[in-house]
Length: 257
Image 1 (cartoon, rainbow, N blue to C red):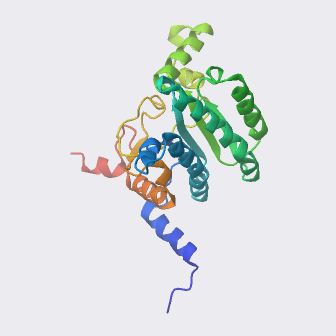
Image 2 (image 1 turned 45 degrees about the horizontal axis):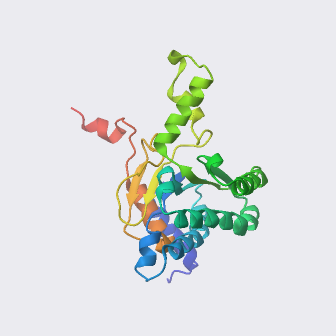
């Protein structure tokens, strides 16, 4: 008898088998390769960054379809301030344009927006726009989108320690939970999966405390070309991983003499 199930349903069933029904709750992405994408097309680097920004919502939709509740994007690092000022200004304007253009989409799809990093380092007008977007979406209880802009992992730890010292918390009372609660990501779960596009295989100072036990997935695909099928491949690979968190799995224990 021929299979009469709708094609979309068949694809979802196949995907579920590939992942074993296991998908990450929180995916963090290093969106790399925008500049190289543009250069290979004889376009200015700014065109690559625009193409990368236009890809964000397409990616979020696919993650949401798979039931993933948290997505964190590495958009601009503390080190990126050292890039040419023309590129820095372009990236700042691009962030502002992205927030303005997508606000209706965020509200329609119940997305909550967060900013991770040093908001005070951004132009005042952009700070105001970001704060207004965060305030407008704070009651949304769908996917949580965190944008890391002027963010660095080491700086995150230093800033957290400064807050702890300012709070006069005694040294003996400082725990991992204390540090977690003073990071920019306070209140968010740690990432389960980190995806980096464009071929490089390193974290580049991204969520280095939070990603201590995250699964890492690297692809040669440039970020503007990273699509729904690429997400499915990454999630299928995640589903095949055995996450131990330093412990032995029951199947491992049986093999221990």
